Length: 301
Image 1: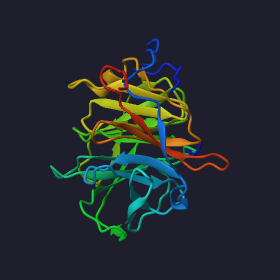
Image 2: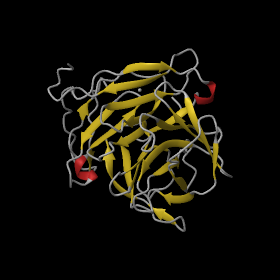
Image 3: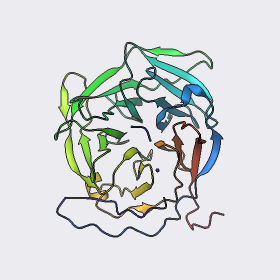
Image 4: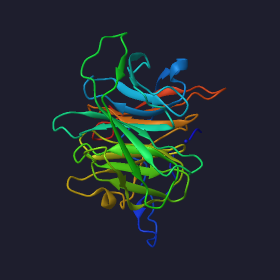
């Protein structure tokens, strides 16, 4: 759970009987990550998820992991807290990721908190909390979220640790990636409309990697990022192509320098790049980092 693109690992989604393909050459799509701000706020020392707000341009939703308060934070690009949203009556058992996307009411945008961590692989049911993204807030005045859905599901092959979770921006389907095994498994859950029953996720394949900690779709659904502690994996998502088929393709390399304990990744809303952030690790410096998208010609000018 706790404790990163030079990227020498072959990653793709295949059936277990298929042979692995060679990785692609380093990509010029994104520049090297630049440190934006040093993480110093003790309230944000165990950040484990990150996603760009849709209602508040330039801001991000984030949270801490297990043992912390059940609070979702709206922050700016300088790691300044703009809003705290406390989920009423909920315990942060092991919040590991956050996503944003469509939900039960057409036209509304929802935040999804993934309480899916399981270091010892003993918890049979995983939980997602879903609430409508707050459209307005008063700076300095925090809020309590009492109107939210509790969605539960199981993995078809039993309990295991998971940290990466994302919601497809068009279909609303959930995608979950296991962490500790190698290769890791990718699961899909068709967009749940209600919280009445515990659903069963579908195993849609494997990724030849381990220690996966975060993932995110671009807001238009045409790009996909997956990361572990050492690497960031990137796939373009052609319109109309199903995700299992997308991940059968060889990923592109994104230049990445290991963070102390990087467990979060998020595309920007405007397509200008993506962010990563690391938990605070004693004796090491953690930053909010930005990977700027290069111009199409790759020149960086």
